Image (tube, rainbow, N blue to C red; front, side):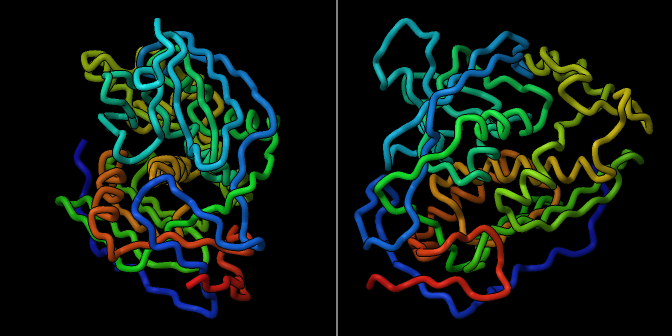
Length: 346
C-alpha cells in the first residue's frame, strides 16, 4: 500500500530541568560498576514461568520459559531445541546489534546462525515493566504470538513477580538528537531527562486507519492500561504475498486485526478506535528495548517500522557524543510535575 503525503515533522524539544545524574560515561558494554548505595537497582523476575502458543509467522507450537538472571546479564534468548549446550550457539543477546532481519517482525541472531523471530511484543512487556535481566528460553525460531499484543506477556511477568538485584540500573540518557529520514519515513531520538516518551503518527490509505497519532510517556502503568492490549494488524489482500515470503502461517483473527477494505473482519471489532497507532507504539517500545538499557529520551517517528526503529539505535550508538549511561536514585516512571532527584557521581 502507498502512504499519503504528510505535512510536517517537528524536532523534539530538549527538556532540561533541575535533575542531576550519576554519570557513567562507559564504553558500550555490559560492565556496570557500583556507584553508591542509594541508586535504583537492577531487577529480574522472582521465579521461572512457562507459556505455550503458536508462532505468528511459522505457525508452529512454541514453548516459552522465562527465568531469573543475574545482574548485568541483560535480556538473553536461548534456543532449547538445538542439539547442543554450547552457549555460543544457543544464546542470543537481545540487543540492537543482534538484529538480522526486520521484515514484518524483529529477528535477532548470533554468529552461529541461530535466530529467534517476533521478539518485539515480549520485549515491549519486559521493557515496560523495567526488567533488566532475564533468560528467555524458546524451543523454536519464534516467540509465540498469543493474541497479537503484549497482554499475555504482561500477565505472565506479573505472575512471575520481580526481585531486586545488588547492582545499579543504568539508563541511556540521550544528549544530542539523532534524526533519520527516508522518503516519508522520519524519526528522531532526542533528549528528555526525566522519562521515556514516544510520539508516533501513521497514515494509511485504508479508511479504517487513515491518519492516527499517539503521544505517551512510557511507564509500567501507561503501557499496561493504554498500549499492551493493542494487536498487530494486517490486510486480507496481502495474505498471499506474506505466504510467499514464508510469513503469517500462524496468523488468524485470534491473533491479529485483519482489514478487508473498509471492514474489520474480527467479530469483536477493535479494542481501541486508534488501536493501529497504539500497536505501532508497542512495537517501538519493544524495538527500542534492544538498546540494552532503559532510554531517557523522546522518540518521535512518522510512518516507521521495525527496520527504521533499529536504524535509529545504530545511529545513536555510532555517535559516542550523543548519549551517556547514568544512574538514578528515584524511579523514572513518568515525566513528573516535580523534578526527580539524581546525584552526580563525577
